[in-house]
Image 1 (cartoon, rainbow, N blue to C red):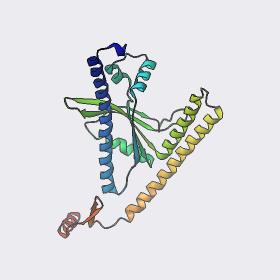
Image 2: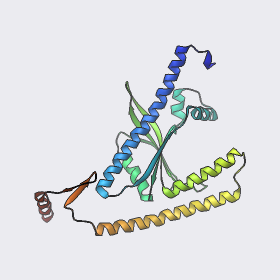
Image 3: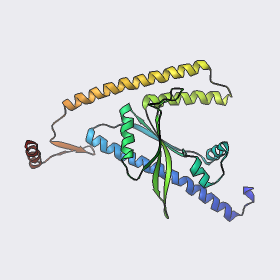
Image 4: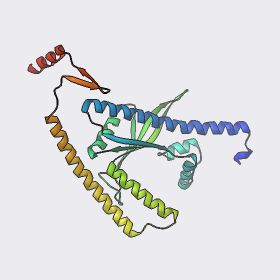
Length: 248
């Protein structure tokens, strides 16, 4: 029994659990920092934010153990790392379909991140209509005495996809608590709602592209830049240098 172990051994075991969970927390912190940098860079260069919001979560130790039991796996830190890949999760919600693949590409371009697995439920939706892009990403985490490569699950989806997934989760949660199966009528309506959400995403994407094209045609003069909400005029000599380069 755990309670019969010596106090020193219990403390060491507790410290190992805390350290293990901290690695996943730090991996999420690192990813959110990287996402924030990408967003700020994109806003400055394109005056547009491809990300609406992000949300992170950590599985509890109890949830991790329950999943190990369901899988019939050994109870050890090594077993957890090998068999449970969604201890840390990051959800990125975008406005438009193209933003999903834009964010995915920006993450792939970061050399110290490793994409271990990709599941594209947008090009290949689940049978119930679920859509999202799932990535398993190894993130380097620098602890006080070593570097750890920590796997986190990143889900990238549109607002419409996120709204549908939230509704589906609430329905399944309600009926699971009552130990009942979800009625077929609701399942059919959920599938129809998923199709409507997908159609809305395509329509919004078309509108977005049209607006971008109009904005590019009406772009302002390139005689100033804006950084951190501060406007800076470009020196005349620099502008003349640019004009000279264009003539060549």
